[in-house]
Each structure stands twice: as C-alpha cells, then as structure tokens.
Image (cartoon, rainbow, N blue to C red; front, side):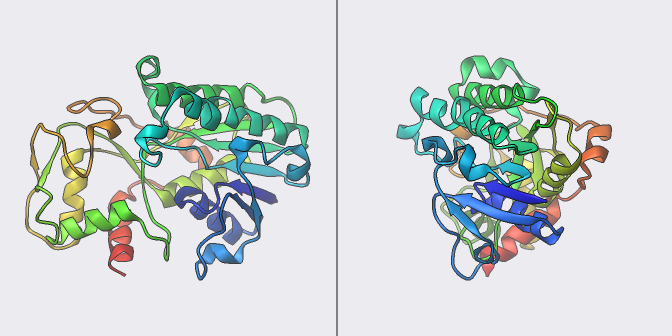
Length: 301
C-alpha cells in the first residue's frame, strides 16, 4: 500500500513511517522540514509542505492509498504565546478536516488521524479547554467525511513514551538525567494524580491496524497502562538503578508543569482500552517500562 505520513519526521509519525515501511508498505513522509541526516527516516522519500497552510491539496495526494496524519500540534510543543484560538483553529479544528477532505477528493481510501484521548474520555474537558475542544472538532470533523470508499478513522491515544534514534528528545534526556541523580536542581517529587501511558511501539502497531482494518467513522480510544505521575517518574529512577524514591508533593513540578496536566493537578485520567478494539487494531500492551528503558538508553547515547 502506498502511504503518506503527514508529520512523518516527528516522534510518532517517524515511528509510524518506519513501522509501516518495515511491514512492506511504500511509505512517503510529508513534513515542513527534512528528517535529520543519518537517521533511518532520511532514507524515506519526502514531500515538503505545511498541511495547515493548505500545501497538500488533492493533486499532491493523488496516488496514495492511505494518509496517516500525525502532525497535530500539542500543548507541550507549541509556545504558550502561540496557543490562541486562531492557532488551534488553523492547526486542529479546520486544518485536519480540510486535509481529510483533500484526501477524500484525491481518491485516498483511508485517512487515519492521530488525535488525543482527553475529549473522548472526558467530553466535559472540551468545554473548558480550547486545546481539547480543538482536538475534539478535528476528530469529529475528519470522521464526518467517512463514506463508502473513504475510511476516516481517529486513534485517540494517551501520553506516549518514545524517541527516535539520532533525534534529540529534550524531555526524556531530562528525565533520564534526573533518574540517574544528575539533576539535583529537580526535586525527587511528583504531583498528585496520574494518567494513562502508552509506548510509541504500541501506538504504531495500532496505526498499522487502523490503516488495514479500522472501521470508517470510528474513533478508537487506545492506551496501555494507567499510572500515577509518581509511579511513572519512579520508572526512570528504577531503570537507572537509582534507589531514590519519588515522593508525592502537591505543588507545581518543573518536569510536569500544571499547564500540561489538562485534567488538573491532583486528578487522574484512567481507563482500560476496549479488548475487542485492541485485538482488532493488533497492538501490544504491557510495554511502558520497556519504552522507558529504551528512551533512557537513547538519551544516554
């Protein structure tokens, strides 16, 4: 299958592109900038452009059998000053459905959007948070285009653990150094609350399953393990062989700012993904600790 991965040089899109290529698909990256030289992604063909600027009209998408969208901006990636209503409208609520419509008009058979779990798990969060609302509108707007011959599908994952070899991952480099005891400026604490985590390997398996077997018009809530923030942070110390024990302190944390805790500090987002959907998409579970060890090893390298 000929597949275009939009956002293919990012962490999730890059892993998805490599996984799909290893599975035998003809994969092309779409991104604003080329991948880092010397990485595995540099060996894949690239179409440069910005989906939010309308660079991927139907003519550029012709000939692809599937489009995987993994370029949606996240609150952790966009600068606070950028996160205006207009920004989220351009990047999410209007930009993503417009790309899906272009894919449909180009004769693409499947459009798989990588969204976010907040609005599917807690629709009330969309009423109070512009980012969550924009994700919800992007999800619903793209899936509304589903019809015979065009499978528009959304995967809504939780917090993703992963990194690409050769591509710096500042957050995980910080967590790895902290776990090794090399960041005394960061307290060995965690805020109360927690969420669901998932390895990028599990997510890429779900993406491949959605491309092949996903039902058009469906939103799949995917995930792996529900952990407190304390238990997640503790994994980095455990992997490093550091005996320090993370303590829960109800205060802002430099590694996990309150702005990144969408449900609010002290609250927990927990769920079990549907077993039938997990089987349909064909992704593994129980992979979070291995993923932490992997990103720590990459950070050390």
